[in-house]
Figure 1 (cartoon, one colour):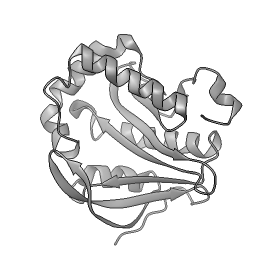
Figure 2 (cartoon, rainbow, N blue to C red):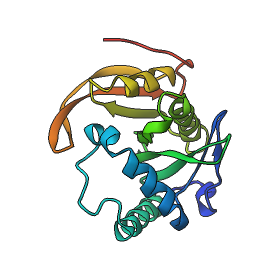
Figure 3 (cartoon, rainbow, N blue to C red):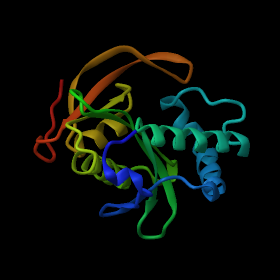
Figure 4 (cartoon, rainbow, N blue to C red):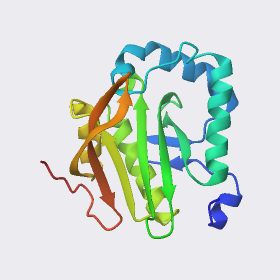
Length: 198
């Protein structure tokens, strides 16, 4: 469980320059399923293989239950990302594998609907979650991993101040295939916009 008193209350919305982040709610199902469904071909190369019932309401309820359980245990927080200009759902971002003690770290993963990609919304969301992780959760290190061919994701991370630290061989099973991933990280006292290239 999260040790901070902050987590005894409902988590408030987090606000960036262009996006608002909040925890997923039951009534987000329709907007989520439409956005994910229409973006399927765009998302599948970068995600674990979709189940046949991926977008069904029952699978949605299981997903929400897992989000709540992870939050209650203090291991992860899932957010939906909304465009501040119109309130539309554009994607999701999760701060997971949260560890305190000597590690004080977490790992982010994210997705965005195809029609919203390339607009800077995900970069803003990554910055918001990173600030939240450092300022509220008092974490020291945030990591992210991405497939070397995913140029869009690499650009998001670099614009958000993450540095490439190395290559993780056969790291995650993505779309049914074990894939290498670049490891990116941001440390609490890294200067904004710091980038490195291999």
